[in-house]
Image 1 (cartoon, rainbow, N blue to C red):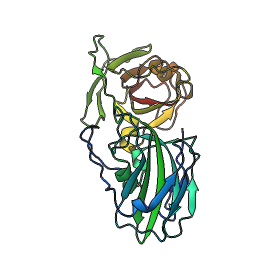
Image 2: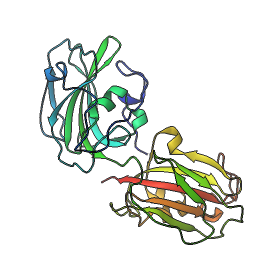
Image 3: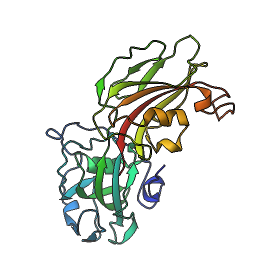
Image 4: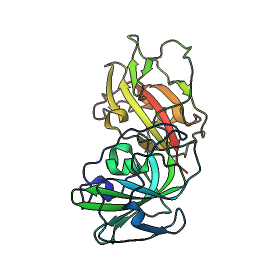
Amino acid sequence: MRKAPALLLSAGLLMATLTGCAAPSAADSCEPSAPNGAASKLIDVSGSFGETPTVSMRTPLKAKQAERTVVIEGDDEDHVFTGDQSVRMSLGLYDGATGQPIEQSAYAEPEVYFPAQLHPGIVSALTCATPGTRIAMTVPEGDQTAVIVADVFDVFLAKADGADRPVLEPGFPSVVTAEDGTPGLTIPSSDPPSELKVAVLKEGDGEVIAEDTEMVVHYTGALWTEKTIFDSSWQTGSPAVFTSDGIIPGLGTALVGKKVGSQVLAVIPPELGYGDQANAAIPADSTLVFVVDILGALP
């Protein structure tokens, strides 16, 4: 699973507890949460998108609120950051007092960031950004101001957005999805199936997942017999990033061949899960139930 640089994951020189926020959802009606303010206009950024920029500024630079200046405008209006999605981007962090760099990611090797990881000021400044956008932003924290230059490569889905498909085969758990995408499961009282069962609840129209595709997903995992949830990325607010060969065989098989935007329901027998070995909250010989939203695929 990819990890964000330390500048966003820990309480450092300029960052506090990292949380996300919500925002509008359509490109033609999206209103940025952070203004194009006087402080962010003092940041001079040059260079091509996806390459380490040259950054200078008038110092000391202080801002009373998060501000943004769009340096390069992206044109992919089908994927708009609205505050609740994961993004793939590169970041440079600078001290507004001195203008000196504090930390930089490799601009040609962007990372995946989850909403719960991002400082509210960053979320605010990124709102309405589309892939291909470079934004210079100011993020105040106490009496200090961070200057960040972000290149946005991808904006992933917040939840599966495919067309609903009925489950015609009997014996599957039933799934009801909340407005924010969180699934609720009702597992039958009958014995679990002895073989892998897979149903597509929402049919997406995005990229097809191959065996080696690194995908971004939201998931909920439950135990058939106990009828309890043992893990859910919805509860943590952080989707997962993995390939089909990095997860249990039954889930990998269930996801390969499905499209981005799909919601997949899988019932996995023990031999395609953890077998006769207990794993944390999962007892030995457990039949597992997964609901997975495929949010995106990485290059």
